[in-house]
Image (cartoon, rainbow over all chains, first blue to last red; front, side):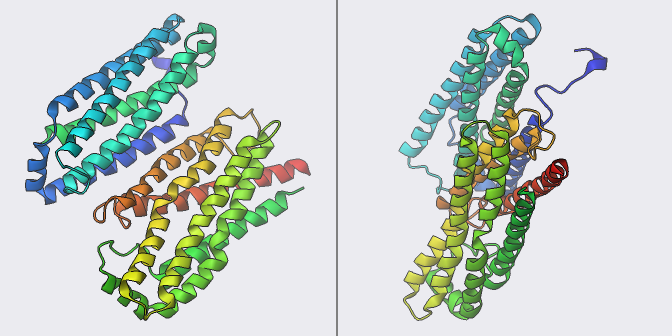
Length: 187
Length: 232
């Protein structure tokens, strides 16, 4: 990208959605910090009940997935070559995230932890649940990207859509990184 | 042409919305909803202390509760302008708008029912009260059947100078649809930001609903002005 021809990736209107979502999740994060400050002991204890390995694996999966998607967009936009396998790689990592989240939730339920256990787990289930919904929508979008990028002629015509879809996936990734830090890392 | 009729419908819907909101907030008095942890005795005491104003509020809300119908009609007509062949997205949006209207009519009816017989056992009033509040808080997601068609048409329409749906409005609708999905969490917890009076289940949808209807109505009125000057 040259300095004098800077442009917004995707399309300008798409950023209404992205910034809107970032705003909402920022309020989520502030809510979490507010509750954590008022119930510090409960949060510190509940924090230890989370499975860090699941959290870390999921972070790595989403980061890898974002890398695949970014490489896919680069390939379509800058080299004009089909990027189907890269988007499929992104989808597989995303599916891995969903499966691990399923294991994680069932592990919690099996040990008797639910959304009503305490405020930490109320926020944990609701916020990661809303994020999981974003992941599922993102996977649908990635499937569309994969299908569009099989034929390079078609993909070049849909470049803005492909960039927009990829942006959404990066947003999902970014939100997870903050969720991971808040729930699994911060003591 | 029908532009004049559509403008009347927008104003009709918006004025009724304001009356509805005033009657709900000032007479019924549940803006925000009371804590979900109230005991049946507290609930019954509220209804018997405020029964007259709640009943009058229910009357006014019943008159005006269907304010979403004229609005949904105009949104659907404007979508249909941009569709070719059978206007499937417009029909879906119209159906979504009508459905959402139902869930705004139900809670005032139920609050009215709760206040209707002050002498009944407190537990029964408590059940009616819970039905009313959960109906209000957890039905937001029916709005998406109106918002997704608007998103789709906004993002796929051909260039039309008189369209009321710029692309950003499509993304805005998609975001609001996302946000409204949180209302349903009112079922799972009684305290905190996801309770029926909490930040994400009550305040966010309430404020966004106002912002969404105002933005949509404003865009419709602006486009209708262009459309009628274009026609003449």
